[in-house]
Image (tube, rainbow, N blue to C red; front, top):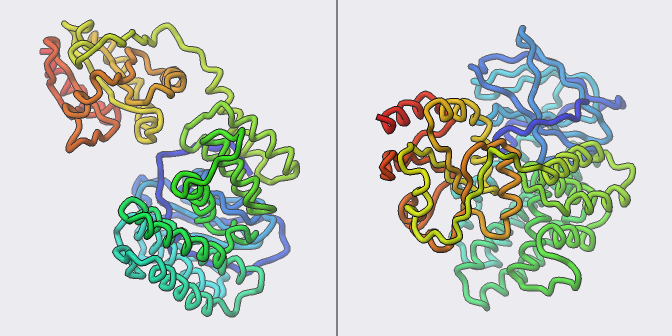
Length: 483
């Protein structure tokens, strides 16, 4: 197993078309097969760790020149491997306790995965589970409503519909061995609890206080019914979202008192997992907390301290290599030095947008509006080198305008250095914040990343410019501004 990971752009995973394979006593899964009709695409995969689904790490499937691949993964329990055509479609999954598996992939087929040696009952159950996973994603994205609950404002009604579905789905799990049956049952319950949490959070901002309390009462009962602390709950791709939401709902919506000495953010999340979960559920939740730090590029400087506590608590954890790698990246980020070719001019006295661009009058400005918490913004920085070379050649100013809050000051500067964003860096100030949103936003919202081209006279030439990811188009726009 290669523990070295490279995280691509954000991917939304719906587990469709899974196949469950017969198990063996071998301690690894060896998946070999062929790939067709990728059309220049890339296949990535997620995998479980000792039977605990890891939704925070994605790796690339290495495909040979003859379109074949071999993927060998460790096994400690039933393991789950999800295959995704990156950025386009979910291909399906394999669940196995080990052995040699033949997997042929046709990215354009209605059923993309062809797997040899599959029990038909297991395939039927896996498809049932994945239809549920897809339905929950559709509900959260407001693309579908399998249970007719999206507009149901009565908490007891929503809870009953979801519980009834759980009972119906679980009645179809017969024929599986006891271990896999329990894992499937808990996957069903985690998915349905996530759906109820979603509706609870939606109702919170629209309901009266009495109605909110009704939702919280039903949420407690739904949580007891679904049992997140069950060790088999960790097999579900919904598990981490469920336990994370539970902490947020408890302390930020229900306004429970935060224990003395516990800081908000990472401290509160770790405390919640430490005191509300146990065993495998606690291990999986804590581990993914550290992996999420790198997935979202939060680089919280306190993370390594909690990671050490975690590794002392679970010294034999199978998550150890991934957690250690994530924390090494965290430490490297937080020890970043600011180079001289990154400039942070003082704009504390600036009152208008013209005030911040005035020092560059007479030059064309390429402005990138971004934030440290914006994943697509960070992804776009992978394409910045050609822009930097072109800007130097044409004497174009690269101006990075961050809309981060003041408390992110240090992180903002380190992230600019981390991505080697040579140029001018300004963090938005309250005095001209509204003008930025009004000028470059729409209906009070500013969508980022957002690129702008400003002429030598200080006038906006392209209110919505191409990004460095579309360099040829951007060059044409910059050349027009230079004239």
